[in-house]
Image (cartoon, rainbow, N blue to C red; front, side, top):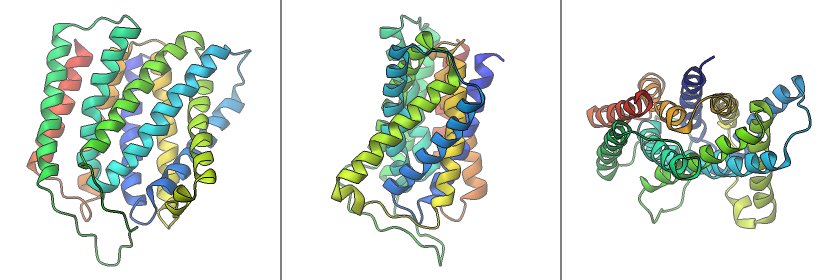
Length: 300
């Protein structure tokens, strides 16, 4: 299949994963949700790996896949879960999707020598406009009341604007894609690469929780853990699809399509999260700008 098809599958899978995150973090802490989602994702890719065992892999490729996992599913997913908890997916994901393709495309230009046309720069500018619109929404947003009877996890007072968190996630995911593309060139095995990346992130975060009393105090499991496990499964499918897309496609084409996950997130939020998150005109307009800019970039 063309890389664009795999990228579209990844976008839809990430969208479903993000909706599950929002449902899960109502009763499960961010750290616990991260561990659960990484564990389920690692198991999914392990099963796929055992079905089709590879030949002797490139050790350099393995190392680069591990780095991509620490950046994308590792740091990026931690920031994404936190951003969704604070802002909801209808705002957090378009914001993430704005910087994600910008950082990935810039990294591909510098390190992978991929070409970017003037039209793609216009598309990136439209994406930036979209995140500005969403940031204005976040700045005026009051805390959202949860439905009666819905349990939640107490969170500390934050010192940084909520909009910064999904922006950081976009940077981590963008950098992860650049490393993932480089790893695919050395080790063209999407299943093995995905398993290495997700498992590396799981092991590092598990070690941090085991060794830090503060991290353990932040790890609280609730009924929403099942939603986070489902989120991890969808995310694993997305990582597999992205890695497969990179076997044939450039970062400058694949990443903007994946970033278009904002549109299905918007639609799914309106359907499944209407009692938790309110999708208004400004959110819709910002999302359309992000998706529209991504389409311009991918079609240029």
